[in-house]
Image (cartoon, rainbow, N blue to C red; front, side, top):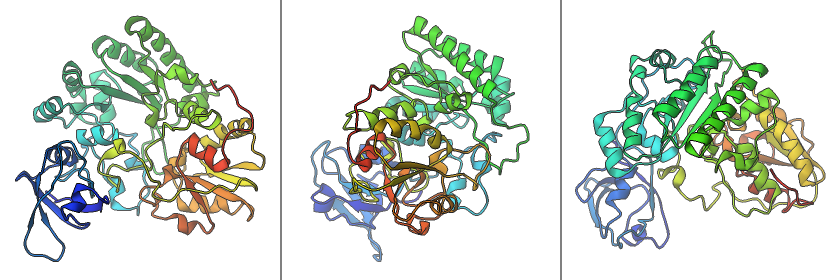
Length: 463
């Protein structure tokens, strides 16, 4: 058990008034040693909790009565989400992206988690192969909902083979327990061509409808393959295979809508780009329940950029954020201040927007509709990972520097923050290493609209 360290204290908060300082180690709350940030919030929710802290440089603990009302926020942040050991993943999925990382990156990036607590806090997908009766009791008792579950296939043999873990054949029994207990669950199917697509995918969707109709949503997403993958059988989808997945998903949506009154299953945006197919309308995504999984993200971005929306759906910033320096409250924490600083856009002059290969296909027609002159999209070729990696979230320093070299000196350069975690790219570099002044903006259409100078020149109808 590692005691969490206080990393921030809000001005005027109960924590500040009670004398809590940055750097204090939180040893216990009301004589209970919390195992994670979930339990920490529960223990500090009441009136006047007693905290035992160890201050740096001091040999003895301090006992502090934190004066606060019931339900009043404490006003401090701690260094991690899990204070005991993160439950690591003992699956060996051939499509796992952790296995496809190049060597030499920071150690935290190679940690595979299969922890239901990180699923609740950050939306990480768990396979449930390490889930236990005690875990189920806690989830049901404390109503840790929603959770996110990697399904991949419902056929026991296929699922065990995909996970390379015999428990993969039986661990979906916990999904039944969670759903029967009223826990909201979002599922995911990572499709590997020739393995769990075609008839296997159709069987998976039919079984989920028949046996797990309470599922909130199911995201069907393609596997990502880098040049560092050692799995010969893993390959990218062809355009025809992507179109076949869309056809299956669309047919299943009609089936679910007829039987359940909602679509439930959705294909990720990448499938439509790979197949060269038009995207569904934003309202077709039933509230976009899997936005963070790349499902309906493009249509959401389009609405934020081209409409008069003043709020953004937003996305959690950075890959690997749950184990690599994200705020302990998880993605539910309100994002009130951009830690990298808000931009003060200059309305005149050329602007270049850095993005991955997928964004380079999506942004130009949207910017044409926006109507701001001298606005350019710069595609960042991902040579660091290679393969079929084209998302903006996996852009790294060396690829960005190469793309920036082609941008004229008089251009403002915009960079989406999704490729940064705590100010660092996956290869460890920072914005300061890019060699040019670069404005980091939140990865939303609303933030881009602001950076481009406000409203579109002509109001457009957005699907």
